[in-house]
Length: 235
Image (cartoon, rainbow, N blue to C red; front, side):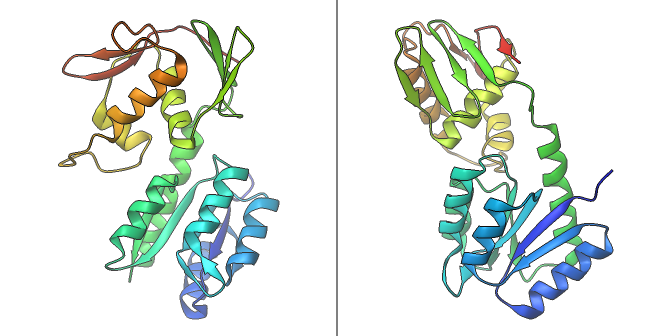
């Protein structure tokens, strides 16, 4: 099996060298960049399996790099590297689709463990399903687009698309809000009080033309969470 390839985007040469050496020692192939422009070029144009992304770069905001990568490669796993106290940046990074974050200063052991976990999760993501059917239309997974039988189309945000795909892949199973937070938002569910999941489901129902009073596609399971009722993912 070919070695997994990791891109390290970090402007501090000493930190970058330590990460690169540790990854190579563990058997990964590694690409590296010290500025945003080079990091974005490598992330968008070269086959990499994971990006380790510092949010503070000399030629621009790492969040902007993350936003750009998410548009061109929506399923590419990304772990953000942040300084202690940059809680808002971490939250924004997760909202933009980062898979995890590591707070500086971090141990190499922790970073390797998180990288391995994210790569395992990404390997579990379903890749064969390209279309999920629902009453009145279907969801084009890669394009993040709803297509209706009347010919109209509606785009989904990245998070909406990920949530709908996760529900569709688990059609007929009640999925808790906690599971959705962990598997779609990659947030620790324990102790988290948020309406994010419910708000996303409400937006999805609206875009799916799903009656919020008597839904046919995304059902509310009392005391549990949500369930995708429509059957069928089409490979």
